[in-house]
Length: 357
Image (cartoon, rainbow, N blue to C red; front, side, top):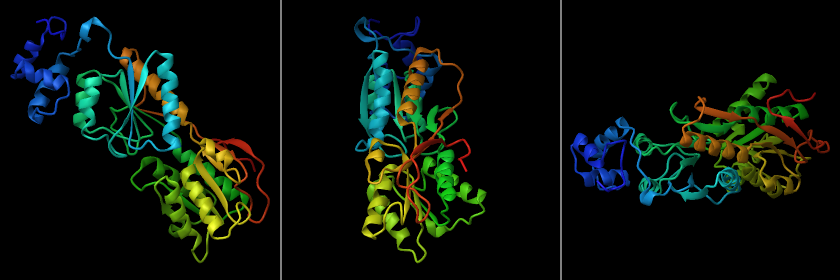
């Protein structure tokens, strides 16, 4: 037909005839146009999937060598670490990186799918996001693989994801404080509806239970992973009649807020209040005092996800579990100590291994 679209000997006309629509409607679906009803789009996509449709490149060239990463927020060091990991692997494979800011923590916005179908990247990485069923179908009908990095919720079993051992990280951070002698340990975790935040909180609770310590709900605060939220939640904890002697923050940015709350309340860190963060961003070693934190391998997570995307695109990805989980590491610096004593000696400890006694 001279339109550059084919499936073996099938043409757009064949797809249109089987789906009982016009050729122009098939073309609109292929290009992500929104002026097609959901029922019609679904019928066309079912035919495309049944025929394992592949769209030939325009002008005889190869498909655009792009890897796309979607963030719901970009103004964070956390996002920059992920981006560095994606760029490292994509560049090594001769691909460029497209960065999209769209949607919420849960899913990209509705305007995103039309643009990504026009770009036709090698694959899509979603940071802290999921995909509604309709968007998954549209990507799969164009053979665009996708992987979620550090998912906010439990992704569907058919959606691959790469994350880290959040439960083990929360366990190690809390055990460290318990072994220093703390018994009143507060936590400022992330949002209540975020999987990684809840897993870190579960690790905190497990460490207390293993040590025979009660879990005091007054010492648990849900934050937003940002410094302002850490300041607000830590302020509430420090104004309790029986305040905590240590606080575990669910991110390094929240830990910055905890440090500021301690300063405002005239408390010295770590002599009056020990503080542990999470992520081990570059700023952690430059705070005063340097921040004890759980290292989350953000860059390695992004690298792993990008390699998986490229393998899926090439059709040679081995059978893999729906979730790949990388280990976390406790990094001890100067912001933690036994109550009333000097800071602990800096070191690195595996979050999965027993802590020294």
